[in-house]
Length: 481
Image 1 (spheres, rainbow, N blue to C red):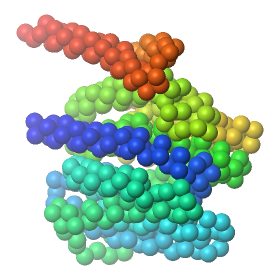
Image 2 (image 1 turned 180 degrees about the horizontal axis):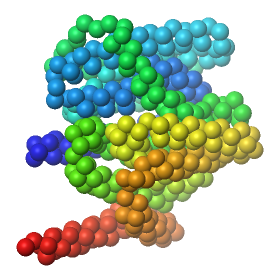
Image 3 (image 1 turned 90 degrees about the vertical axis):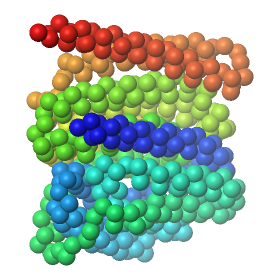
Image 4 (image 1 turned 120 degrees about the vertical axis):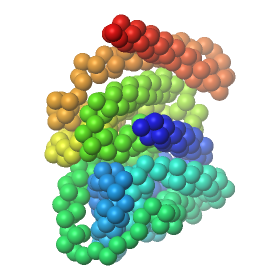
C-alpha cells in the first residue's frame, strides 16, 4: 500500500512537472508567433486544425478513457492485460486507417483554400492513430510519457523560434512543426510497449466486444468537441479569421491552466478505477477528498490569477493589435472554475465508476447548449459570443454530471471547500489590482502582481489547511480509547 501511495505521489510530481513545462512553452512561443504570423494566419491555423481534429478523434474513438480504465482494472493480471491490449491495439489500427482515408476524401472534395496547411494538419490524425499513451496511463507509468513529452516540447520551442519567419512560408513551417511534434510524440512511445505488454493473436469477435463500450465513451468526446472545437469552426465561418485569431490566442492562454487541472485527473483516474474495481470504497473516498481539494485550489487560483493580471499581461504577451484579448480573458476566467469541477466529476467519478450514461448526457446537453448559444451570439458579438457560449456549455455539463453522481458526491464538503478558495481568490484579485494602479515599468509591475497574487492566495490557503489538519489530529486522539 505504501509503495502504491509513493507511486501516486511520484506520478503527480511527473505530471505537474510536465504541465509546468506545458505552461512555460506557450509563454515563450505565443508572443513570438502572434507577432510573426498575425491574427489572420493564426485564424487559418486554428480553423484547419479544428477540422482535422474531428478525424483525429475518430482515429482513437474513446480509448483515452476506455482503454485507460480497462487496463487499470486488470493491470495486475499480466495475461489478461496482454489479451485486452492486443484487442484494443487491433481496433485502434482499424479505426485510425478509416479516419485517415476519410480525411483524404475531405481534402479532395471540400478543401479549396489553404490546402497545404490542411494537408499538414493530417499529421494530427497520424498522431492519434499511433497514440498508445492510454496504455501507459492505465498501468500508471507516467514517467515515460512525461520524459518523452519534455524532450519533444523543448525541441518544438527551439524549432518555432528559429524556423518560423515573417514570410509566405511562415504558416506552413509553423503547422509542420506543431503537427510533426505531435506525431513524433506518439511514435516515440511505441518501442517501450514491449517492456510491459506482449501482443497476442486475436479475432474479430474479441475486437468487436470492445466497440460498443468504446463507442459509448466516444459519444461524449464527440459532443465535447462541439464546444471545444466547433467554436473555432463557427467563428471562422460566421465571423472571420481575425476574430478567430483573437479567440485562438485567448483560448490558448486559458488552456494552459486547464492542462494543469486535467493533468491531476489524468493521474487520479487509473488509481480510482482500480480502487473501484477492488471495492476499496473507504480508500477511494479519502483519495477523492484529497483530489477535490487539490483540483479546486488549482482552478480557483489560476482563474482569479489570470483575470487579475490580464490588463498588463495581454498587451505585453501578444503585442499590438490584440487588445480585444483582454476582455476575452476576463470572460474566459470563470470557465476555469466550472470546467475544473466538470473535469473532476467526469474523470474521477463517472468514468472510474462506469457511469457512462451521465458522461454522455452531460456532454450532449452541453454541446446542444453551445450550438444554440453560438448561433445566437457569434454573429452579433463575435469572439465574445463564442466565450459566453462555452461558459453556458461547461456550466450545463457540470450540473448534469453532478446529477449522475450525487449519491456519492460529498456536496456540502465540496461547497465549503469551493467557497473558501473563492474568498481567497477575491482577496488575491483585489490585492493584485491595487498593485496594477501603481505607475511602474510594465514588466516590473507584472512581476510584483504575480508575487502579490501568490502570497495573497497561498498564505490563507496553507493556514486553513494547517489548522484543519491539526483539528483532525486532535479529534482522532480524542476518539482513541
